[in-house]
Length: 205
Image (cartoon, rainbow, N blue to C red; front, side, top):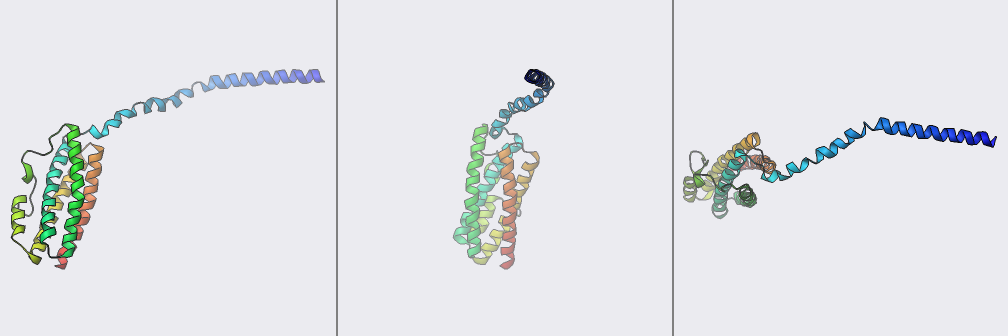
């Protein structure tokens, strides 16, 4: 009886060994696909240089938006001094505070890309607020006071923000750099919200 049991154990052990061998052979083909992700992952570092990847649309967006933001800050700083309404002064302060860091961010991109930090034409490039350039708008605002100043500031800044939204939307269509696209999306959201706020303030004057 014991001898028969030992024979059965040997047979069973042999069967298990054979089945394992067959499983290993049949599984050989399945190991190749599992290696594919490792091979694909090895190409991922190519996208690690995304911060330096850019095209002409990204460059133009950063250059133009820096100039645009500088113009907005110049107007906002004047409003903080001359606006009669506390709401308008608070809005101007928020605009100045938000756009300063964005200028620094876009300047750092352009430097990293080896591009000029401002477009040919300087401050007046792309600036058109109800038919006025940045210089003309600042002169016009400087001659106003009280509610008249607040109204004109809001009207000009609404037009200014609409220009920024258009520039950001162009970047979203044509740009390539992930960070620039992210900022463009944020600018559209922020400035459309501020346009709505300014229209509300304007209607209350």
